[in-house]
Every structure is written in C-alpha cells, then in structure tokens.
Image 1: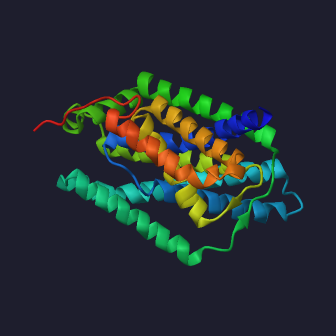
Image 2: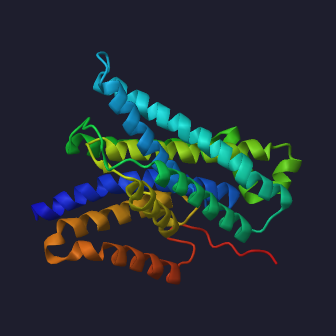
Length: 295
C-alpha cells in the first residue's frame, strides 16, 4: 500500500511538470490552430541552459544555491522566449501571410524541430547531473503549487483581460479580429512567448531534486509526453492539458514503482494505448470541443 501511495505521489509531481509543458502546447494550438513540435526543443534548451548557469554560479564564492537557481530559471525563461519569438517570426509567420494550409504549417513545425534537434545533438555534452537544490518532498509541493497557480493565472488572463479576449478573438476568426483592430502578429507572438516560458519553468522544476538530463530526456521523455497529455485532455483546453499531464504522470510513476514485475517496460504501450482509445471515442480529447471545419 505504501508503495502504491509513493507511486501516486511521484505521479502527481511528474504529472504537474507534464501539465506545465502541456499548457504551452495547448496555448499555441488554441490560438494559432497549429501544433508547435519545436516546443520539446524549447524544453531541452531551457534544461541545458539552467544546468550550465547553475554549475557556473555555484563555483563562485557568492553563488548561493537559491540565487543560482533563480538566475538560472529567469535566464532559461528569457532565452526560451527569445528562441520562440525568432521561431514564430521567421518560420511560422511567413506561412500565415501566404495563407498556407495547416499541413504545410505542421510539416514546417516538424522541420524546425529537427533543425533544433540537429544543433543540440551536435553540441550535446555527456549526461548532465543537475545540482540537488531540494529533496523529493519539497519538489513535490513546488510542482503542485506552481501548476495550480499558473493554471489559475492563465485562465484568468485568457478569460478576463483585454489581451486574453483578443487572444480568443484571434482563435475564433483571425481575419475578423484583424478588422476589429487587433494586432494578430503581437497576439500570436505573445502566445508563443507564454508557451516557451511554461516549458522553461517546467524543465527547471523537473531538475530541482538533482535529476540527470540529456537531449533525449528533454526532447522525448519530458518533451513528447506533454504533447500526448495536451491531446488526451483536449488540445486547446487549459484544464484538459493539466488533466492529461496528471494522467500520464501517474501512469508512468506507477509502472516504475512496479518495475519488479516488468511493468515499466510497458509504460509507452500503456500510455499510447490509452491515447489511441480516447481519440477513437472522443477525437477532440477529454475536455476538447468538437469543431467541424467549414467547407
């Protein structure tokens, strides 16, 4: 029983991290109606940057742990936001101006992801061991509270503020929003900025208790699962992204807890099996809206 409870606790922590990253996927899709596959590379960039900054600062006489962590966090956020702005400006915006199809945008997003992957693969160091700032119990509460606070703030921001209303207008009809005087390019860039910032926050929380980090972990292990979480919950839905994140986090943790019976080797089969089943019965995801495209 204690083993199961420990697994649930680990799952909630991991699920919170997946949820933060899935919020980024959902934000972008909800406004732009495209899947930003480069999001997992934003996560990886944030992880590498946080590692190198903390390692550099901790070697200095005045480099206290908390200050090093905060500087690394804000640096990761700033760099990921800059990368997201550049990506949106030079890779995605020209496609929107030309009125390119969604499949073209999707292929471009995959191409951008591979470009970032190739760059990071070329310069990737050996497995990185992040400095342990907190123990598991503390990181658990940090993950849960951060996710709850950011979900609440994002929901209020999107539903109640002028910029949030503009975001929803762009999501509903980009051309009509433009005619109403809304700066679509600014709104879309801001959406990418928020998504990349969430990616940076999520990966830093993941590394807090001294986790190892590699390109594969950033791009696949904690990069791909949030996408699956967003789709399961209903991509474009903020609460759905969180539910999907918790679901995948708990499944992954429970299978690790019972690895002695070989369950851990089935983790991807179980997660993607649930993914397919949910999409078969509810293609829009658990909390997604069924929207029929006009022809």
